[in-house]
Length: 254
Ligand SMILES: Nc1ncnc2c1ncn2[C@@H]1O[C@H](COP(=O)(O)OP(=O)(O)OP(=O)(O)O)[C@@H](O)[C@H]1O
Image (cartoon, rainbow, N blue to C red; front, top):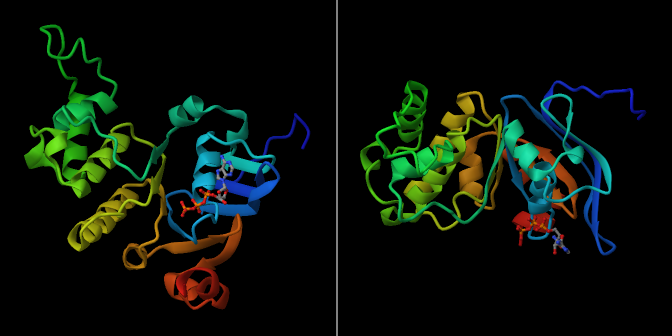
């Protein structure tokens, strides 16, 4: 593609022919994947399939050797660093929750909104109406309104995961990448997390969820992509993907 041409697609995320090797090992091998704006997609696949590396490529942590990675129609993510990509509106939640345990839930959300800690609590600081409204909305979404004054360290594992999702929501991202959100959760928390993500998706966010828990993936009720050896092995509904002989062989039948 010449410098003068600009690619434009109607999708929120567009990966085409992406390759990444680590010392000659092809972790991502001709990966192509498209997510429509407002879509939620579940990504499954065996250990080492390239799921984390794919997220690293989208967030700019890893640069592909080859291929196109476009965001929001036309932004070439391969040309940007991690901070620039985050500022574009791509939020990532890692598997382990990293909330500020000695701060309250509300303060964790304020920190995510980038309200300066030194100014907050002084006479000069007044929470703006917009900030207050965002905090209320996020607290409600993550089901922690009644717990707003509790220290984050006192929350259950599941609630900490929701708080961290809330911290991303406070920044109003366009695309949310969520890595194994229900690992270590109780069945009830797992169910509530599916509901939570569906609600976030209904609120016009595009969401990518990497998860091994098939009950949870089924509950999300969205299109599923199975990765294997750095490429797409199968794509479709959970029933279609689960009935795929290759998916059973390399992943589900283990
Ligand atoms: N920085 C790196 N250096 C060398 N090899 C790497 C690096 N990062 C990932 N790999 C390798 O690339 C392959 C894909 O790894 P990746 O972590 O993306 O898989 P995954 O699908 O996320 O697996 P899991 O479900 O276990 O998290 C693996 O074989 C891994 O060992």
